Amino acid sequence: MLSQKISYTEIAEAKRMFETCRNVVIVSHISADGDAIGSSLGLYEYLKKKGKQVTVIMPNYFPDFLKWMTDADRIIQYDRHRAMAKTFITAADLIVVLDLNEPSRLEELAVPIMKSNAKKLMIDHHLHPQKFCDLTISYPDASSTSELVFRLIDAIGGVSSLTKAGAEDLYAGMCTDTGKFSYNANDPDIYFILAELLKKGIDKDRINRQIYNNFTEARFRLLGYILSEKLQVFPDMHATLFTLTRDELSRFSYIKGDTEGVVNLPLEIKGTKLSIYMREDTERPRIFVSIRSVDDFPANKMAAEFFNGGGHLNAAGGQLHNMPMSEAVEIAKKALEAYAKLLTA
Ligand code: 5GP
Ligand code: MN
Image 1 (cartoon, rainbow, N blue to C red):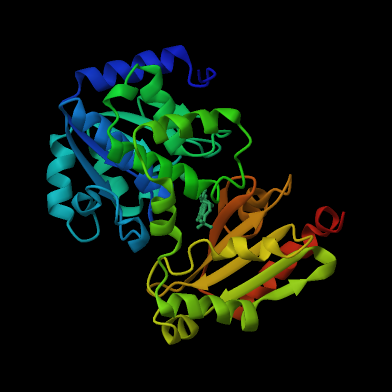
Image 2 (image 1 turned 135 degrees about the horizontal axis):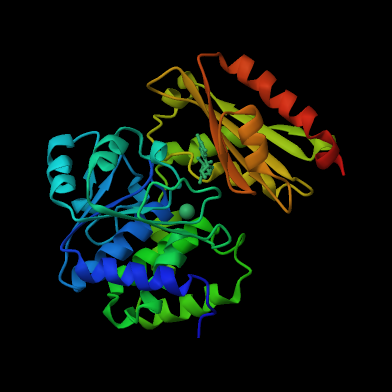
């Protein structure tokens, strides 16, 4: 048995929403990751089996290594198919917002979503959720939104309606948000949920290969370039930093998603507490910042103070606007200085 996490009132309210809705739209965050797509398609499978009309809409592109999921090809990309997406949003009587805590994470998709009169349900595990939904199910200590979707389905007695494809989706979300169950993964319930998902007949070894052993040669060589040429190590600070400019990205035929997860690698260096990765956007004059940390180092606080961002304790990010990479590097060094006491401890 799973221990109680989602409150009884939230369960009852969500159950009522699922029972009374007919047309559902599920959305998740910009540059969707495994948990965004996994939780969305997992819930889609469940609601579809319940006879609902369900459409999944993402703000923009999502990586190829997630496209093996059943019906991933039916996901509507808002930046490419606005009119069609808006038709579904207009027809929706329930909108489920997954794996994000504020409308800005939907970027332009936020406009039709916020305009809609449909009931809105948020299920998420990011800190400080904004209250823009009729029901907000937010548990920042959960490993993933996919875990919360499973818990909700379980709590309303729906695990028997979860398809094998749905189990694959939720497994993928939990697996990617915990780095293959290597962080945020101490809750014994996670392994109970895994057992339930495996009972649906999923092949988790194959899923792991589809997600992780799926590099293009260019991406693999970019990884080598980062590690051998670009990684700066600050041994006294137990910190690392690497950057990629537009030019470097194009040299390695970069496509979005190619450096997904790479920021975690420097944490494999003995003693490293903090890894920062800065990448120039290929479209707008901005630099994306990714931060990963271990133990109680507050990556989200650093992201908020120095990089206009936020996130989780150990995985956070932000953006710097209108500046060359050299200036961004100076800001990163200032951030390290500001946190020197915690880092050198
Ligand atoms: P990633 O490094 O994978 O892009 O992001 C890690 C986490 O940092 C995300 O799950 C999200 O919680 C947070 N994050 C990334 N970028 C931003 C941002 O620009 N603003 C905020 N508030 N959080 C971000
Ligand atoms: Mn997540």
